[in-house]
Length: 257
Length: 347
Image 1 (spheres, each protein chain N blue to C red):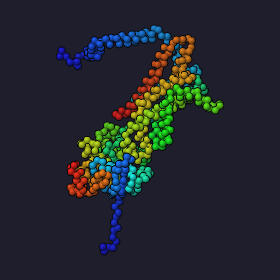
Image 2 (image 1 turned 90 degrees about the horizontal axis):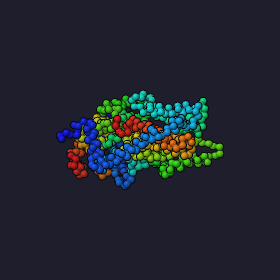
Image 3 (image 1 turned 90 degrees about the vertical axis):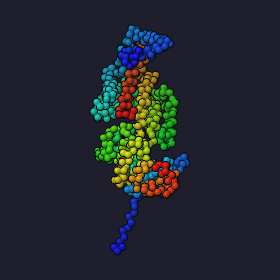
Image 4 (image 1 turned 180 degrees about the vertical axis):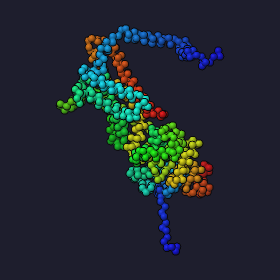
């Protein structure tokens, strides 16, 4: 107090901020209603909820795979609303990596080509640099030896790790994971979660839709529970898994734990 | 007794299989014998005719005509060069990929495109070669030129039409759908007739328009409509999730088509596209009825020669062999492509 100059409070930088987000599919189904969610830089947010609760739809709005019908969305400083501008969306996609449930690797390209495709064609970077970095990334996720194979020759777990490397090749500032382990054999789940955990340890901002309670407990800074297109509860993992406030959260946890 | 079928010797096993497959019951035996007598008799009389009764002079004495049509005798080396280049390109492409140096492998698609202008130059003349009018082109040389020209025109056209047919612009979509449906609804002979006989009537006085080019244009527009549907089928087989992956990586719509959709769609469509290529070769024979002396046309005019009166059978068997040989080459090329492009999904 005596020193006189109070440090001005550092504003927490947000990676994602959604306000009153509405998503209505063309068939009239309202997948999201009035969703407010903020994700700070460096934060790991895990979204849980029963199927059909809108959790995948929510993160798909973050990189413009789903348009929004109401509300406002700010991703890495770019603003999106209902009259979704394609230019803004493509600017957002340059900095947001996404990993899908079904991996979605390109079957006609080798593992290495899958990883180098976007850096070469979207970022127009030097081929040799891109290739070296891609090999380093594949090394990082433990599949450098398979670089010249094709996706169909790899196991599900390996394919998903390639998909993560492919998303990382664009040096994203935000990573979205849409049920990354749901399509995997149980014994392959661990290797993929390890990769995501390592990424979190490096300080990557991540939003992860998953049913893996153990993973959420250990890695998440915050758990968001959704049901019927709305956010029901937000809490730290300890609080959420041991002392959920809402009845719907309790019901959900009683089913999966 | 006690001897399992597996332990028997090879020939014994064969005998057992023959007995089980062909002579299992009295009725089977009767059917087998009757069919064997019919087939054997047919084959016997066919070979008897081929060796003893047929007069192959009509083929042997006219090999030059079958291959080059009425191409001027003193220039026939040029026609040979074109056939030779095409044959060499076929053989190189059919070689196992690992036996070819990388640069050659990369150049192959370009060579297949360049072979057409090279062929045109060799046949038509120019650049120091004496000009030869297109009405002197003919025989196998012309059939292959027509086929290659048709395929090289129809494939890009088919791809563009397939893409336009799923465009988000309604007008473009309606126009291409209309074009494809209309073309598929017309008999090819009518399209060729229009191209060969009607177009010249509509052109201003004094304009001429090479009739080989007219034929290639008509065939190309026709086959292109069919290829468009094959490519469209390939595009539809791509899961939506592939497009989402491409979009989330920031690929523009154009890049998504070029790098993700078309490579996959063309792999899927390859067997049907190969089918269209073979059909194009067979379709060129219709031009014989419109005054082009390609393989069938020249054969008809050879048969018109009183020396070879009544030798239809010999000529048509020979033609069947020639067309069949070219088809075999084309289909083996397609199989080679299928393997090289990993169509089956395994490496």
